[in-house]
Image 1 (cartoon, one colour):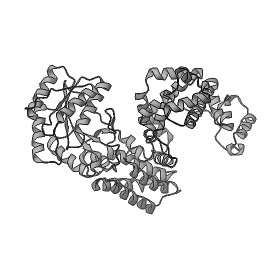
Image 2: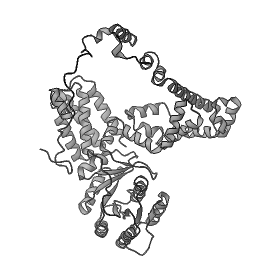
Image 3: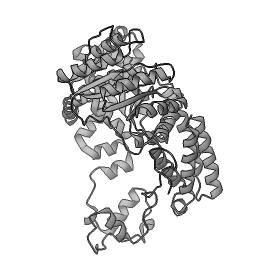
Image 4: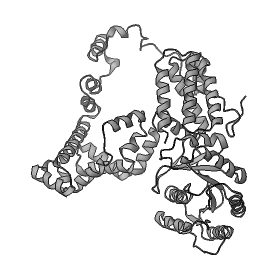
Length: 527
């Protein structure tokens, strides 16, 4: 979603990083480009003005001029301010209330309320083990109630029985009573929407709110709506006092401006984002991680969390045991490919890696087929159990039979066999020699440094000099450095504040004291 904005900002920062020092003119030129990039990304004009003003104020100050790498420092400032715009901390759905905790889903027609309602129910059931009841209050859209009932069955959550003659307010009363008597932890009410904000919609939703007394009112907004999403959010917030925002279709090709503007313009946190059509394609909104993705720094934390979701402890233990033995067969390769598919395929994984823009361009240039995983899994499935366990059995005739069974050329079988052999060799090296063997795989100097690393404290200067020469380092460059033998005068302070004071220098730049945005809800006033 943020691809075009990420590319634009990446080019601007590349120009700044290459300079040894930054003048006020350089910063102004960069700010003009950043302003243009944000406006093109559909970010609200008032947010763009506040953002650029805030970045410029910090970028022309001592924070950058004293920095060893001014270009990098500007990138850090932009990152800090992006996080401020997006909301600083992640805010989750609050369930700290007497059961059943009522969540009211509101928004325009077509924004994805009903699907999002089912996604949230599945998330609460699977992750927090909550007993959830769903109720559709949409009496206008044909089959809206039936849609929620089908989705409820799909995710394994109860839905309120449909009574065709009831009004939305009556359904809300019955849902509240059923939730209380049925011992449910959470009640989610899915309201009706319109194609635009009108008085009739607001009156109905306000009356439902008065009856249901919801603990959370979640506004569902389509991320592809653009700047109009902010006007929608303000309209609903004025009448209903929305507690949080859920953005849908974040995986689409929208320009991302709504996400950047929403929190700053309304003061309400974005709590969840929909990143796909599947029922588990819902993620917590982490401002710092989104900022990192926009600036091409990747999102390794989310990648690790995603891996943890799809790899069970049992699978991990099994793999660790095999790694210890140094064995790796086609069944292991198939499980690895299946896990990568579940995590979003090559594109999904690459989008969370640092330098995602460049990686995607490289992938596009290399014409990497996303369906290659499916074909490779089909090939492995076409093998017999014995062939999967003993890859050495794959002679020419067997490969022809497997190719016919999987509907591919023999050359693809050969490629997969080669890929498997390389991975199996790596496993064997790691199991036999630990880090030393792994270092040896990178060749020469690296292998020599990792494998059997000696104790430097027990070596004399001549041995250290010889070792430096082997590693390609000129020993003369090491002279004049502080001696490692100098004793430490005092113990290090236990807290960070004392450590900074004891250093005797000024506070580190960019580590706090950043003022908030002027005049925008939820971001404080300018001092």
